[in-house]
Structures are given as structure tokens and as C-alpha cells.
Length: 201
Image 1 (cartoon, rainbow, N blue to C red):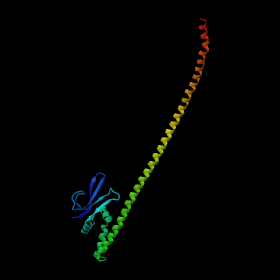
Image 2: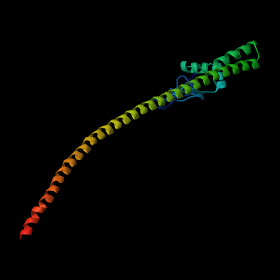
Image 3: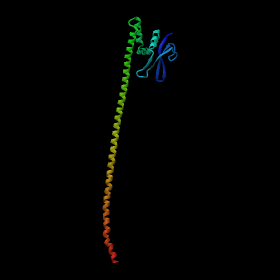
């Protein structure tokens, strides 16, 4: 029976995640499998890979053939490095403790690179957010300044319109007062004439 290490798709449309499975090469893609050894989520950045390295190594030694994507995943997680180190132990080039030490050192270096990438993505995201907020604050300040300028212009126009209107009633009141003054003088001048006929009677 030809055994393959391959991906089994799960998840909804446009949001896939995969199980890494050991399956008969004749079985359907998402069908029957022998064993599940991990998972792979390409939707995160960086991609999330959970893999049982020892089981993957065991199946590789038994002759299971990985697909191209799974081969890259196994290489990324260090399965092929561990296989290479175990061959060195079998040949007697170094002991198992040395092989384990080299593998752990490689894993730590790899994890440091991954952490640096995650940190870089996080800091760039925060920087973009900060730049977006600064741009938004600048636009809001410009809008507020434009609104204040427009309101000041409207107030100035309103004050200019009210000033001539206030002067016009004052001018109208002045001639009216002058007209009332002669009218008031006229009855006073007629008073003796009115008294004269009364005296004759």
C-alpha cells in the first residue's frame, strides 16, 4: 500500500485550514486516513503549523511520501534535519545527545526568526494605525478650522447687515423729532389769538 503524507482540507469557503494526515494514496483528499499528525492554517501571518515531529519522522522512515506542500512544511518544522541527524547517529559520526543538542539549537534559532517576524508585523501594524490616526486628526483639525472660518465670515456678514439697518432707524427718528418740534411751537403761537375772541365776548 502506497502511503502519503498530505493535507486534508477543512474550513469554510475562502477560509481553509488543513489537517496533516497519513493516508493511502488511493483514498480521496478529504476522505479516509490512517493517522492525523498535525494541522496547518495558512490564513494567519505567519502561517500556523502544529506538527508532531516524531510521528512525521517515524512515517518518513517507513517510506511515506509527502506531497510538495507537506514536504515544505516538514522542512520548515525541522523533520528533515532531524532525519539527517539520526542518519549521522546511525553512522556513528556523533551520539544521540549531540544530535538532540544540534536540533534544539536549530529550533531556537528558527523560533527567534519567527518571533522577530511576528514582532515586525505587529510594530508595522501599530505604526500604520498611528499614522492613520494622525492623518485623521489633521483632517479633523482642518475641517474644524474651515468651519470656524465660515462661521466667523457669517457673523461678520450678519453684523455688517445689522449696522446699516440700525443707522437707518436712527436717521428716521431724527427728522421725525424735528417735525414734531415746529408742530409743538405752532399751538403755543395760536394761543393768544384764541384768547382774544374770548375777551371780546
